[in-house]
Amino acid sequence: MWDLINLYFDHLNIFMPLQHRPTFEEKVADGLHLRDDVFGAVVLLTCACGSKFSNDPRVKLEGMDW
Image (tube, rainbow, N blue to C red; front, side, top):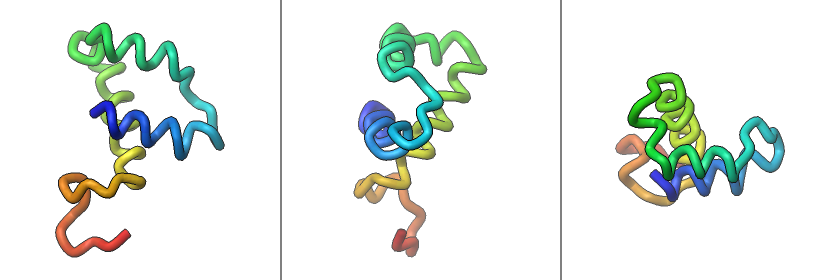
């Protein structure tokens, strides 16, 4: 999860700064995404966006080459 969050902030948030990185990371580290459904959804969206830049085969569909 942290790798995907880092990829999001390294590749997307620099162009569209929608989230404040220190605040976001502090809330994730505190486990807010486990207690708050709305923040949990934001974390999942952040990870989904970061996965586009990942080389990890676990985040790609089989046969996809993007």
